[in-house]
Image 1 (cartoon, rainbow, N blue to C red):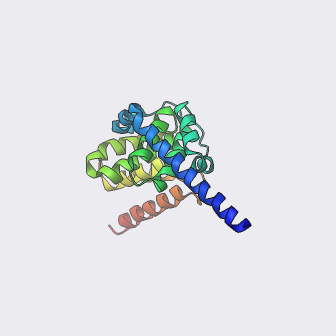
Image 2: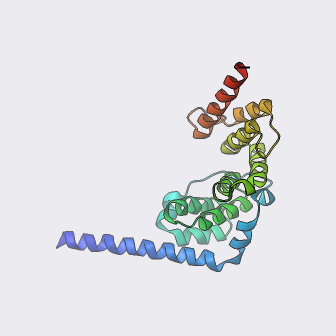
Image 3: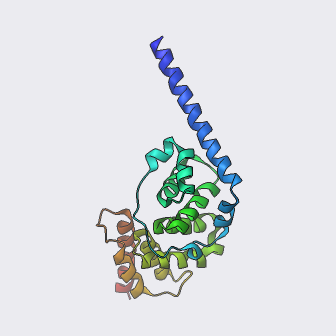
Length: 201
């Protein structure tokens, strides 16, 4: 009987979580401000100052509706953490991308970088100029992934004039948090390819 009781508790928790996520999706659908933010280039939303990053993913994965309430109250990190959660849980990318846009507007530079990356993933070449401009801005605030992405496009000459010296310069900023940072590892790989290509000339 105890095992059956525990199973029922687990099942009701799963259903409650599903309902909470559905309520969160419905709340975002009902809020026209998310539609406006989603349509904006993140470079146009870019904050003057970068807020410190805080990870609330565990909380948001268990309490998405409460997390959305905190996001709507103006906390950029709850918006970003909820976006990260919904990226994995919701097939429609609109919700996570709209939340990254809101987080960007509220002052979290890494969310601007994430939104720009999402533009390229979901809209392709048509969004390239906007995305690269956003990466340039986020790199100016020393965001690791922003510098890695900006360095990549500088090296390719895609969406921006090709400049290998500048690419190497901004890629070095990606390693400000140490060599274990995935942004740094990606930047080092790109830098190695640039240097190898130059040595073959």
